[in-house]
Image 1 (tube, helix red, strand yellow):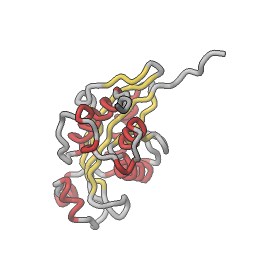
Image 2 (spheres, rainbow, N blue to C red):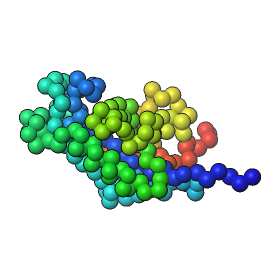
Image 3 (cartoon, rainbow, N blue to C red):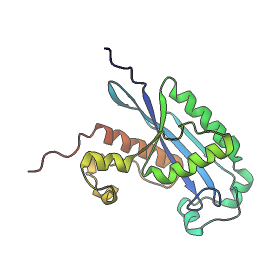
Length: 200
């Protein structure tokens, strides 16, 4: 019996900046994405994360925001209320970009950690376009990937606990595109990492 053909996955690193803890009451303000690599039956092939990217800034959907959350990104809500794209336009453009870069592969969103970014991305995609380009479960969390490979509890994982050789060379700036590109580098390093060697 022949082995079932495995459809490739295209890993897309996504980072968002928002002005609060949950979508709906609060707004997604910027969305950055970078193609991190392709995974097929032959293994993972890293991409140049700066080559195929996406970035948009969005109009807020409510008047509510958490000042501490807004301060992280440094984005100006008043400017975005005028210059930001309507969410339906930004998310439609994003879904089209995901389809174009994925070609014959299944797109997978990846993040570090993925939970916050996925929550906003999925809610916005379904709310404003009717569907997510990643489906309902096409999400990979890099913290979980590291914990599984390292054999450590998930809640003990932080970048400062990782081997230095796994960490991206690019800085973490809290600009959504910069951070998506940085996280794509982290994913490539994690995918290539065999895990810690045997204890001595």
